[in-house]
Image (cartoon, rainbow, N blue to C red; front, side):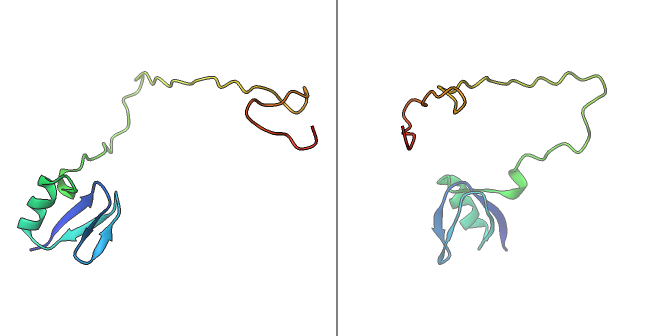
Length: 88
């Protein structure tokens, strides 16, 4: 019986490398249990399922942003720290 799994990290299995995040079929229940036990993969059925229902009306959505400051700009003639500008 094949068991659907998802790789948690890159590892060799069944003659090929399984990359992190891809889904594959384990050869059987014992292989699936072993891969889970050593932390290489998890069963697809164990993955969290996203909710298909939208957020309730009036629900508050919080978005955090960060301001990023750069050291200079071409218009001001200032060089950015750590960068070499050709011709100056």
